[in-house]
Image (cartoon, helix red, strand yellow):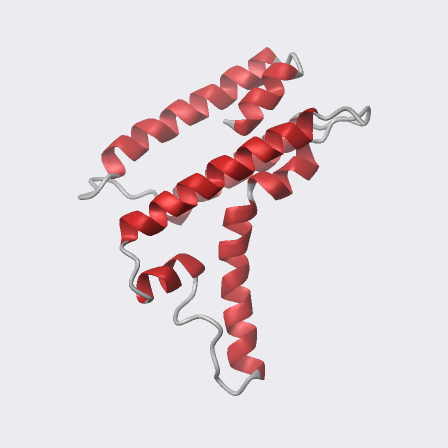
Length: 144
């Protein structure tokens, strides 16, 4: 939804409508994904969303001051940290004689392993996702 707002403020109404459609479809999926989940997205579904996110980021970027691509790093920070935790864990095991940084990777499973219930991990990721999404919108709309 961050890029929907960015597109809206850039007067790219068709792109904003597309983003709203993606958000609506994702919310409908999440409605049925609340435990006990009836549907699972898996890698196939998330890959399409990630590619769409990258394309929309480039479409909201321009050479005259657009910050769509640079905002992507901030908007996607929770996803990037989670992905990077897998790399850190693998490198740690390889170069530190099997010693791990996390109990289990990716990071959200580490939080579950230390005793956080799954709903708590999910809610924390939602809050962080919203905070970084708002910061990304602010970054993208700053005129430099």
